[in-house]
Each structure stands twice: as C-alpha cells, then as structure tokens.
Length: 339
Image 1: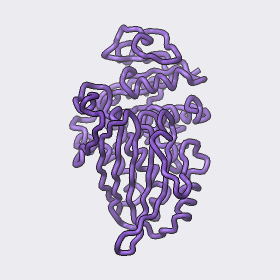
Image 2: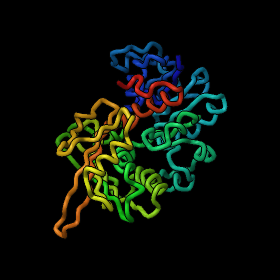
Image 3: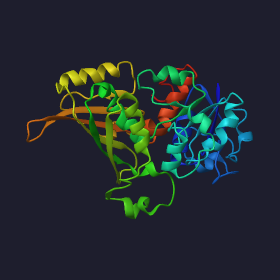
C-alpha cells in the first residue's frame, strides 16, 4: 500500500483528492493536514461515502515523514517551503498549486508576487500532463511533479496534437470556469446571491495560468503567442475552453485523425465525432477531457479551426490528474481510483 499525505486537505481540491484516494485500492491515507481544522475529526468535516479515520494534523513536515508521497493542495507559497525536506527523505511530492509549474524563479516572482524559496527545484520538477507526448516516462521517474492548472490542462490538450504544424499566429482562447476554481474562501464573487445566474470575465490582463500555458506552447513553437480571456460562470465545477487557430491544413477529418492518433491509448481524452458538441455534464465529476473540432469559414473565405476542450476543474484540472500522476509514478495502471 502507498502511504499518502495531503497538505491542505480541507480545501476544494484537497477534499476532492481525499475522496478519490479513499476509494483507491492501493492507497492508505496516512496524514491529512489542515490549518483551519487542525485537531478536528476528519469525518466531522468531510461528508464522504468512504469514511476516513483520524484527525486533521498541523501542516508540518514531521507529520508527513511516514508517507511515500505527499500532495500539496494548498495556496501558492506553501509547497516550495516544505517540498525539499520531504524529497531529501525520499518522499515523492505532487504539487497541485503553482509553485513548480514555471521553470524561472524570476518569472514566478513576476506573476505570483513572492520570491521563490526553492528555485533549484524548479529545474527538477516535471510538468504533470501525462497526455503530452513523452511526458509519462518523465513523470514515472520524477520525485517532484508540478500538477498543471485547470485552464492550461484544457487548453493544452486542445492544441498539442497539431502544435508543431501551426503557422506563426496568436492562439485565441475564450475559457469559462465554475466558481469552485477560485478555491474555498469568502470571496464575494462566489457567494450564492452574487454568483447565481451570473457570468463575467476576470483577470483579463494578468491571469496566472497565462505564462504556464504560453511556456509549454513556446517549447514547441517559439513563434506562437496566446490571447487568453477567462470567465467565471455560475456553474459549480467545469472548464469550457473555446480555442481559435489558423492551420495550414483545414481538412477537418485529417485533423480529427491527427487528434485521435495523438491520444490513442489515452484513457481519459475523447475526440467527439463530427457534429457532436460536448457539454460540461459529460466531464463533471470525472477525469475525462472531451474535445470537439470544427471548421468555421469567415466572410473573406478563410477557414479557421475552432476547438472545444472541456474538463472538470476539480478532477482532470486538479485532483484527478494528481492521482493519475501518482499512479504513473508508482508504476500502477493510471486509471486506478479514477474509473
């Protein structure tokens, strides 16, 4: 059995992670930490079908020493202060926050407005998007995995199969998120009377998922740019990204075949048939990504490729993908605990 610790277990992603791992056949939940609920019975806070014995502990390294792997479901700035002490003991780490997604300490400071306390680990971390070509092997041998953000997961899965053939351009992404994407707090935008039956754009100039997504895109094609506009919707969970691109080849069936070949063997990514339009309900509470491809002709006779890419922000966009990465790191079937 794999002994697991979760730091920040009482937030949305932490609770989702505990729910998934409590039903994982190869996992024993060893230590769940929470600043807010330290000392309280776990089952008094979580209302899960699978009961978890014990109490929440303080988020200290000494409370995690008996773990084989530790997940950080914390705000930014926590994992970078604790990860090194765990890794030195041979404990694997998966960070669901953004502390290790960027490879430059300077870029991290620019976007997250804090100094990175473990800059050496930025170059040791592996980006945890298993469906990215060649990434599974890197994850398998990693000691530290940076779990991707929810928007980048949706966007990258919708672009990667054809990225190397794209001409120079600015990829446009219009993305919508459920209100759970901002975490569990008392932000007024997330209160029922503010969020219900509402819809708005936010962080148009400075969303922190922008550099993460652009870095990966430019690793493949340095002449690509990204225009990314996120929106907050009144749904509880889900990411719906609409991606606009120019392609050299606009034969939609050839492009569909390229996507299908790229994700061949990937259990969690499905390409929609022609004329099929996925819905958030198709991916809700699952580790699935649903992708639909469409050609749209403009008034000048040019044809653009429009890609719809949908994930659950708490599962494939966070905790589910983290479990998928853990399975790969321990040479397990990556579907375990997720289907």
